[in-house]
Image (cartoon, rainbow, N blue to C red):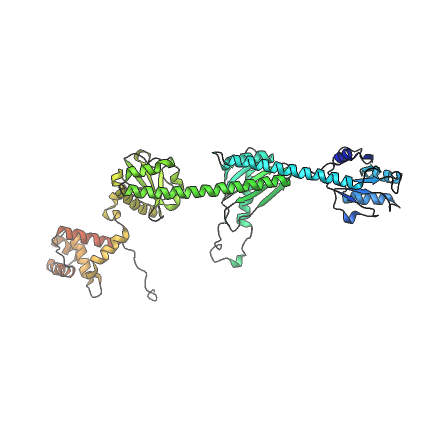
Amino acid sequence: MPPSLQTVVRRMNLRPLAGTSAPGVLDAAVRWVAVSELADPTPYLEGGELLLTTGMRMEGDLYHYVARLVARGVAGLGFGVGVSHEEVPPALVEAAEEAGLPLLEVPRETPFIAVGKAVSELLAAEQYEEISRAFAAQGRLTRAALRPEGMHAVIDRLAKEVGGWAALLEESGEVRHATRGAKTEAVSAELTRLRVGRHPEPADARPRGGRRPEPADARLPSSLALSGPGEHIVVQPLSGGTRPRGFFAVGAKHPFSPVTHTVINAAGSLLTLAMEQGRTQLAAARRLRVGVLEMLLAGEEEHARAVLGPLGERLPEGPLVVLAAPADALEALEAHAFAALADDGRTAVALVAEEAALSAEAPAGLSLPSGYTTLPNALDQARRALEAAKGRGGVVRFGELAGQGLLALLDPAAAQAFSAAILAPLTTYGSRADLVESLRAYLDSNGHWDAAAQRLGVHRHTLRYRMRRVADLLGRDLDDPGVRAELWLAMEAAGRAPTPPSPPGNSR
């Protein structure tokens, strides 16, 4: 803070004459020293100055002169005696006392410039002290950032530096860490309000059926200041780019000084750096886990364990199960098990001890119990179970698929491709539809001619003729059980294929 009027009075041996009897008057801050002999110097003042004059042009109604100085907010009036006046005019003393303006007598032997230099030195000393305090606070914040608690330690230290509270928030406004007394509800509510309703889109500009999609960070503020009775809050974003990765908030009962703002900005830099470093380390660790998973799938279990050791992680001992989930579930899985991305980043895979199999809110697939030697097969089972889970939600275990038939264990696209290829001679242009129907009835009746012919409503000799035609077209022996199994699978897959859309113009 600038030096007080009391400090200047004592250092320069000035004598108070009027306007100093009220409590706290001499505690007023002196922000500068101005010298003026004008009848009205207020147009050239900002407020907070100690005005010095010798009264050369001081005449007329001094009440108006004093009233103008008070209205301008000067810290005090110093009157230099021994030049144009041997003593301070009584009328000025009376006017100053009545208006409550501190009036000081400046002795003849005290040059005005000496008063100005003294105030300048005091201001410089205060600025140096503020800078020193800021540097010291930055040092304490830096040391806090190096502690194991990292960002949480910086928040705790920042609260002490500002004499209030501090909090760390997610981009969504959810609180990650806060000190005692933090007004996080108000901060989160304000962030939500700005995100949702800062720039509402005109109704006529919205697409039919809802709001126009916007970037996730389109409504997030770059900074925020909240003030109320006895509460001052500053909120700043944490980001290494254009999109905030989170926010931190600082609050106190008193307004923040320039030094405090410097400390807050330093904390923001440290928090942003820590956040970006954490993201970089996390990305590197995830790439390493992908490599470990590839080693395990290649049968290099011991090598994989050796690589994973420096991360402080351990692979579960067998038997284990493989859990497959959408890629966005990776973070949740990492908190409980060894997890990595597979399928070029499309699927999150976790290896879990059989007795501690995880549940998941998102669709997920679980393999049968497995060892590391059969891990590729278990991963394939988990993927297939995940595909089934995407259709119905929740967690699907591969063992559950066995009760849904053979087709449930096959990839739908692969099964349909197989079906189209094997049945092509019967389904291409020019083939008779009754051949396909006859083949299905024949397979459903397990090769019994009479039962199949009765189902079709034809003579069994007619059916035999059709089956010879089918065998000729397919080039396969229908008496072979393996051939009949393949054809049955193809017919089942064809029956489950999605119905193609009608060509344009054919709808009624």
